[in-house]
Amino acid sequence: MKGLPHTNSTNQTISDPYRWLAFTTVAVGQFTTVIGNSGTSVALPRIADDLELDLATASWVMVAMALTISAVLLPMGRLSDLLGRKRVYIAGLLVMALGVSVSATSQNLPMLLIGRVIEGFGAAMVMTVAIAIITSVFPARELGKALGMNMFVIGLGAVSGPVVGGVLVDIFSWRAIFVATGAVTIVGSGLALIVIDEARVRGDTGSDRGSLDWPGIFTSSAGLAILILSLTNGNKLGWDSPFIIGGFVAFFLLFAWFLRWEMRASSPMIDLTIFRVSQFSWAVSGRFFGFLMNGPTQFLMPFYLQEITGRSASQAGLISTPLPIMMAIVGALSGRLSDRFGFRVFILVGLGMQLGTLTIFSTFSQSTPLTVILPTMFVHGLGSGLWMAPNMSAAVGAISRSMYGVAAAFLNLVRNTANVTAIAVAAAIVAGVMISRGVGSNLESVSDDPSGPAGDAFISGMHIVFRVLIASGLVAMLSAVMAGRNVSQSERRPSVYMSAGDLD
Image 1 (cartoon, rainbow, N blue to C red):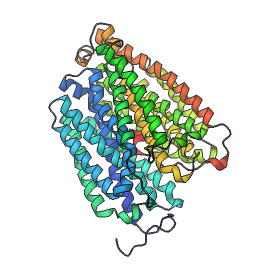
Image 2: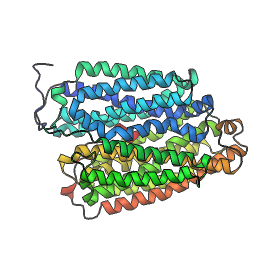
Image 3: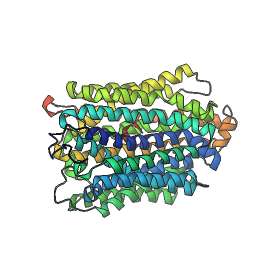
């Protein structure tokens, strides 16, 4: 790459083709993180059947990776500053390849979960560095174009995951998804080794890069893990069990200690002073409750489509595609339009549409026709696309550019934590309803007789989940109203940190 002009520290002078070579390289990693996770969600019913898992236990196949990403997302941003973005990015892809290899060869749940945890480490490394690389090699005047293309790549992965994953599951087995994901990560790491130039992607890290906040990392990770374990095991052990009650108490104590430590640490994992900005705080709140409202849809619908309606994995994947398609297309447009017209109207309309679709989801039964399911998925995706990008724009538009990095990492953390919590809560509610009706929480009894007591209990639990989520959506809408108070046009900045996680 010698002899080609490259960007300076202010991102002002870059006109060579290198920026698109770097973008293509990063696009492979972004695509891989999305297609691997969305493909696994479609395969989850088959994994549960093969390994004889109940719903709450099966949820850990998704939770294990998401929980790991939440635990290490912020530290990986600091690590990339210390070691270099190229090294962390390539290492992330190789760690993902190791994780999916373990998952593909697993013979039991513990081994599969180990593979998902390893994959989560790698995905966090890739997700953290990918957007930083794009913003480093493109000048400010071309960021909209570059990030629009990035949204297209992410959307392509979100659409391809259920379709390709469903076909692989039907033709081969659920293990084929992990094999395919591993092949793409190997190709991506080789491409990154050749193309990425550390000098061009390092950004403005400064000489004083600080150190990793290990107490903050361990405290936040342990607290979140204890919370999810308590939520997913409440039905089995009983919600009045000393272990469950102790788990919730331990979570709140660890959370309080984490906040106190972060306020005193010399190099904190998250600078809590950022929450003094009211608009940012309300946008973060809305983001959490918005993704909490979204999470159970992508988790429960594959089970509903395959176990209740008797469709194949490939059919379930195709039926699910309207949601990510609309998220990708509308998300790329709404973020840019919100910079011109303001974020509040897009967020409120998007969340309002999703409240309507959640109401419809809560009426689905064994006989709901495809003519109802498909439009509902379509509108739900449209609503997601309308609010997600403007929500991030509202958050980063409230703070200075010097804080974009930490804000972007934290917003990804909020999204991932909400998704993890949503899956755990959804699994706990459905499993609790099934157990209370005396049919147990084994999914095999549902697939054997979808119209019988087990199938009816699953449907009833799913209805409760979607109705509970309506309350979460209302809180998200209130947060949008509060974030939008007294916001002037000069306070709005482009949303430059849309990431692969927003379409997971």
